[in-house]
Length: 227
Image 1 (spheres, helix red, strand yellow):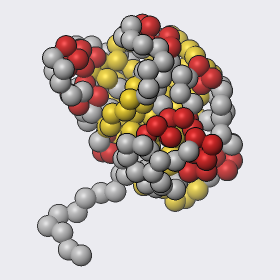
Image 2: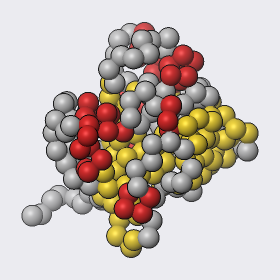
Image 3: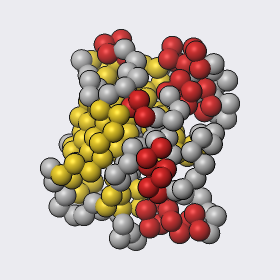
């Protein structure tokens, strides 16, 4: 099949493999840690999970430069566990959900908080706040075959060496299997999908020149520079 111009397949490296993981969609779970809800939203702490998406080409690989986005004076970091889907399905039961997971990594949900706030007040979509260029930095994917399916572990982020976010995966309101089960009542998952699973408390602003580092114990680390 011929096209009028080529489109590059967005992908992420896989630890221990020369092959790469092709990315199809990026789903994000909103408000999945109690302490983050309390610091930003004041919402019902056990409401059903909700989801939004980032464009695939928002991926920024580990070690990359994050261009400070236009029209924002308050761009925030949100460190997150990222789930890489290996086999698809719809209406997946929570008890079977982990069978669909290829692996895990760490990502940062970069957010133009000021633009997101305006969208919330005006009851408009969040794309301007969440779905801009380079808004999904991610590390290489670690296969679940190598590390299993982590249910806990430290998740942290620092800016210029100062710890900002410091939590544990066990603090998630909705576990990975539960999030997958909820998500697949709305969308049919497919191989190549990523799920960013929410962030703990401590989100804050970044500025040009900042070095942002983070990680999840037993999975991966990440580093980007704000330019």
